[in-house]
Length: 452
Image (cartoon, rainbow, N blue to C red; front, side, top):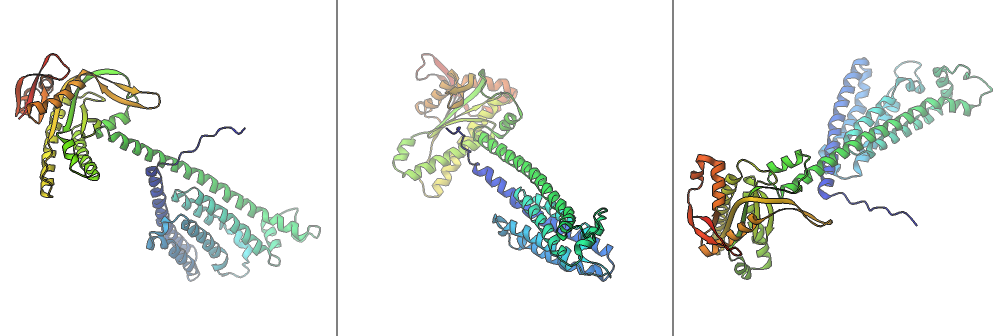
C-alpha cells in the first residue's frame, strides 16, 4: 500500500499574480541591466584595443543590444512564458559567435585555439548572473546548460582543425604528455586537451545551480510577502487599518478569552423586506452591496471593527480587539457618518430615478463584554458576546417604536463624558434625553437618548 500523500494546494490567485508580476518586472530589469553591461563592454573594448581593431566588436554588441530591445518594443512578449527562454538562448548563441567567429584574427600567428586562454568563459558567467534578475530559477539553469554546451561544441569544432589539439596541449604545458609523443593516440590527446573545457562547463553548470537556488529563495520571499499582504487584506475586511497594523505587529493571540469595555453598534435598514418585494433578485443584491460598502467605510474610517453583516444590517464594535482612549468618541462619530452616508445615497438614488428612500436605524450601547473564539474544531470565530450586545440590538429595535433614527444608552453617554471630558457636550449636540424605555426581553427600564 502506498503511503498517503497530502494533495498540494494550488497557489492562491493573488499570490500567483504577485509572483508573475515580479517575474515580468525581473525580465524587464534584466533588459536594462543587459543594456548597461553592453555599454560597459563597449567602453572596455574600445579602451583595450586600439582603433580600428576595437571597432570590430561594435557589430556584435549592437546586434546583441537589438535582440535585448525586443521585449521593450513588444511589451506583451515578456508576458509569454516561453519567449524569455528564447531570448536567453539567443544571447548564448550571439556571445558564442562574438567570441569565436566575429573576432577577427588581427595578429600574425594567432590561431583559434589561443582564444581559450583569453577567459571568454567569463562572458557566459555574466549571462548567468543577469538571468538571476528574471525571478525564474529555471532561466539561470537554462542559460548555464546552454553555455556549457556552447563551450564543449566550440572545443570540438576548434579541436577538429589540424594541429589544434597539439597547440592546446603546448599551451597547457602538459609536461609528461608532449604533443608529439607517438605513444599517445590522437583520441587521448583530444580527451586530455578537453579537460579544461569540461571543467569550465561543469563550473558553469554549478554556478547556474547556485544562482537558481538564490532566485528560488527570492521567489519564496515574494510569495511570503504576497501571502502576508493577502492576510492583511483578509484582516482588513473585519478590522480598521490601524487595528490590522497592531494585530500584525503583536504575537499575542487574538482569541484569548477576556472581558473589556466595548461600544457596540447595531444598524439596520427599516422595512427592507417590503423594499425587496418590489425589486428583482439582482437589484436586491446590488442594494445590499451598496449598503454594506458604505457602512463598512464608515466603521473603518472611525477605527471600528466590523463584527458581522446581518443581512440588511450589521454589528460593529469599538474597542476590539484592543481598547482605546477614544472608543466612544469614534463610535458616535461613526453613527453620524452612517446616517450622513445614507442621506447622501438616498439623494443619489433619487437623482437616478429611484424614489424609494432608505431609512437607517441604529442602536448604540457601552459596557463590559466577553471576547474570545467560539465555534468548533473545524471553524472558529472571534466573537463579542454578553448583555451589552443584546441591549445594543434591542436599542436598534426601539428606534421603530420611538420613530427615531438612533437610540443611544445612558451608559454610553456616561462613558463618552469620561473619554471626551469637556468636549462631550459638543459631541452630544442634538442628542436628546428621553424617558426610560422597556426593552424586549427585559423587565427593567433602560435610560436612553435619541438623535434628533
